[in-house]
Image (cartoon, rainbow, N blue to C red; front, top):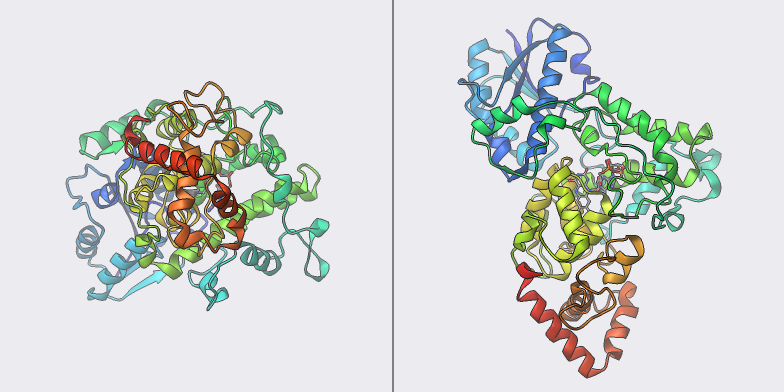
Length: 509
Ligand code: FAD
């Protein structure tokens, strides 16, 4: 009897041992289903990218001699949910075994687990052969600890995997972390490398998606589609990045500019999260680039920390704390998203640029996500669940295992500080220091009061004032609370009134 092997849309890893040799008794099952397009409202490019990547993957497997059973979104036989389709295929092939690759999202993991419990044939979940760590590894490392320090985990990973290490467990260059060298704003030079991503025309696929009635938002950009669709394209993008952008990645990793959206970021998150690329091979190539002298250590270390450190760490956080993590809301924030989250039409130039760009490209880099959009959401007390669903929908790389801890934990501090030692919030001064967004803005970055005052300023103080119960004893916030206490009563009252006024008209800012 044959075996059915299920491959999900974010499991496009041709190097997985399942695909070493085609087997006549194995049917690989892939499907585009409404269950997956509809669990949250997605950016159009995210739907196109995943379907196009899946189709490319299926074609390559077929060419290599594998038996692939592919259900397109408009296939009349498609029952539009994983269990219903799997049931039908098992019956169709009279299969003797069912196997699936470990899902990365809790939602799918539960669904598959429930599904196989009731199956009458033997089944097995197989490792996706992608991550450095197992699901529970980070949880085990931090067992019993109140704070899960990323830096602790990162050093553990450097030693364990011998990345950027010298003999005797010493980090190369004598330092673990070059963060303090990596906080420069971008003066316009060196020039942003050209966006050399391969373009495809996916207009036909987009028409199929629309005709199937799938809802979405953001620009599809289908005729000039820019995201990598297979391993070869992803590798080419990685190699370009190593030469053209990585040398400057370190120093400018926190910079933002209205003139250069990508700056020196890799744009590899989609390829990594769909497993076209493995984290290990990316880290090795980056380390080799440093060892052969083509990039400075602070750039290689800064980049490796994102992948060997942050990416694995947030995944461990996710698996250990789900399902409760998704509902965390320590500040009891409950304001709905202002309507300009869906249009970019706000007078705050930093937010307008970051959101408009997100809607256009299905991407924003880390500091736009954290210190512009997330910062505002937290200061304004937006409902973290709504914020989470927006992030999960809008970005090309958004899969819950990585998006949720970044949004709920790092960005919204809704977990009460499990992940971040203090909330990532700022007034206008930080945004002005790291970007050119404030130039030409309707609002004045220096003002705290009045119609033209930058909303971040009053909201910043209001945030700390209203959340004193949770944050007042945080040793990292001593200075903030000292300043707040020193504020004279008239200034304090005016600032609070200004903040209340803003919070009452978020849609109009
Ligand atoms: P680069 O800056 O070139 O970084 C290289 C790689 O490092 C990324 O491709 C990514 O794989 C990894 N990385 C960097 N930072 C993080 C991080 N904080 N957590 C995990 N991996 C990281 N990243 C996602 O992949 N999916 C998400 O859904 C996602 N949601 C986010 C939500 C919020 C609120 C915030 C603050 C960050 C989020 N991130 C997410 C992390 C980060 O912003 C993106 O990984 C990055 O912007 C992707 O662009 P890039 O490939 O050019 O990254």
